[in-house]
Image: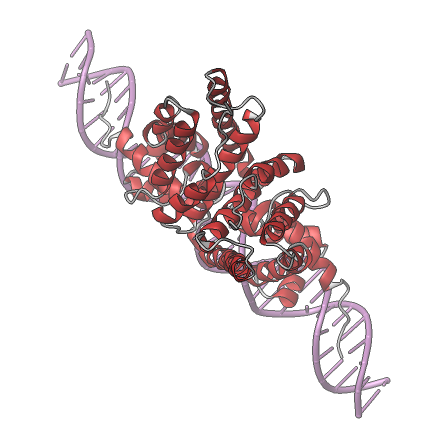
Length: 196
Length: 196
DNA sequence: TGATTATTGTACCACTTGGTATGTTATGCT
DNA sequence: AGCATAACATACCAAGTGGTACAATAATCA
């Protein structure tokens, strides 16, 4: 009964996922969504409820469509292989060339609207400075005979900074100080030493 | 010449830092700032320029006041100790009880306004599910004789998830797929094996 | 004291935000 | 055909956004 819908809700949801993934929840406006989805505001509200409902539905779609690899990964024969598949698969999802970079689950509460792009870039630049400082420190260690010749200082700096970023997100999510230090415990369990 | 300022700009900047650190750049409104700083809008604009200028000044203050430990940490005698001091010091800053949790540099482009708090909590909850799934997988590995008895599965799950979070932030900042896989390379270099 | 100058408070600007009321158009059932 | 129903488009809402004009106020200098 009644008039037919002139758009495909599933297709529209896929587009919403793309927009939310790039701009985050707050950084995305209803106008951004309707424009990208090619529908009007009342159509959006009638079909998906409000903005929050729509975002939750895109989260479900995202997990179903992009994070589905995780379920299989966990079933690998060994734990080591399961974890590696998990991280490799996630790395690929994060850099899937057909989608905005990053994770909807992280960008959702992290990414910002186009208006504050300059701030975002400023923050990225400052982070890069820190990573370079650390790399330089490791290079100095190498010349001190304190860091192996066959290890890549940039790789280790990148790794350490990533640990820091992960801790920062955890802290913002309410993690305790002890929680973070346990991350450090594991992260530093294997540190390269010079063979002599 | 002229009327005296009735507030201390430095003190006001410290308050702005607290607000930005909790809410992020976009999540913080000018009204949030003036209310917390106890000054009027024109005073804010006259003293600090616009919102973007103010945020950059809080960034400088943050690095000077909270991230200053990093400079000394890098001067530790060994690289290993420098890195440990870096991560431990950062963990403490992230959970400093006198400041909102997390890092201004990360929250700045990540944290959200009070309006989208429910979404933030939803995302945190979903992340926790993943971490628990991973921990359970490691527990199963332990009963398979594939994970050491003296290793904490929760610690390793926390560590792996943190690596993932760090990669997600990197990806959102424009990191390449290769960059992320290099992080994984280092992260998995040391995986616990059962002694036999 | 009087002129100058910088800060203050109030009130406002145009614009965007998430969300809707309403009338119109297109469909299916009887 | 005629009625009921659902999606459509337009136009709107109150509230909040970053940012400012302007006049009153308080200080210093001559």
